[in-house]
Image (cartoon, rainbow, N blue to C red; front, side, top):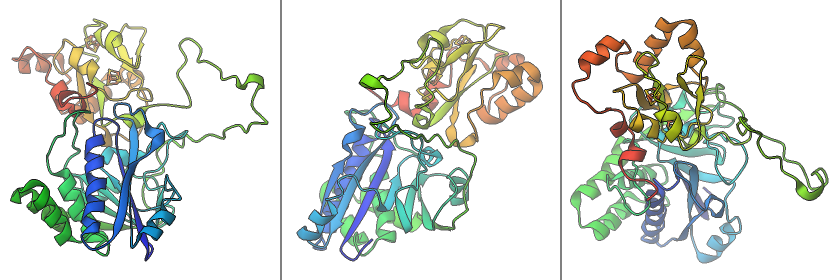
Length: 379
Ligand code: SF4
Ligand code: SF4
């Protein structure tokens, strides 16, 4: 934040949270106008066309006057922001977007002593434990609430935007006042519950100062040196992937809010997951099982939907995992340890007899747990 302007970005899951991000950025500008500031909200060109779950960004820039706003807009895609807002806590594991190569820490554009707001039902320490090691001080602000998903043409009005605006008013009161946020929401919705959600975001936001060195060094670096024009091959040839080879430069796992875990003991080797996975994430094992390649999986949940065996594939919160190691090797070497891991992560029994006893319902219970498939999607 300078005295003349503030830049806020919203990091969100492409398509599913696009309307949410738009509403937040627009409301920031409208609330700031109530105290005489000017501003503009815009999406990042490089994210278009958006893809399901792939991280994307929108921005709000607010300034004391039009001249300062124009000066700020000279950086059309701000490289440095005062506040970054992540509307899905699994985004703290890093962001790999259309707009650049590699995976970036969620705090990358946040300036020294800036703010990272994350909507989450977890504690600040739990969120920080999955955030890349900080290189400069900032404040982590956890806004109460789970990730809000909807499709492209619908909006799930669960008040996430109001809670985020309330929390923003707490950390940037010189630019966005709580009273202005509440007045704006009242005008737009005529709904006192929506106004109270802003107050709840303000009161419930937990602020955790982060020092350099805090966070995790466990995430993959995934950064590349791009060739300059003098080092490109004649004709600017780009190698195609060879059959069976996966793209080492674009891994897709940062598109994931939930990941599938597989119970190999109840799998009937029907091939449905392998056939229906839109990203060809399954490898066939020598035993004829289908194991998920976690670096390639986007977490769409289709495999869990098509699997005919109850709780054979369960979608699990991505923040429960520390790495992308494939798991079939562990099952092969030490089935008991694998099954313990499966039960711990999924919360359902791995033992086929226990599964059969629990399986009074004929359908697989897992898909409804996936907000990105149950709530809409790429219509
Ligand atoms: S969730 Fe299942 S179907 Fe979707 S990308 Fe991952 S492995 Fe494939
Ligand atoms: S869909 Fe389920 S039962 Fe069929 S192969 Fe995949 S994991 Fe096994």
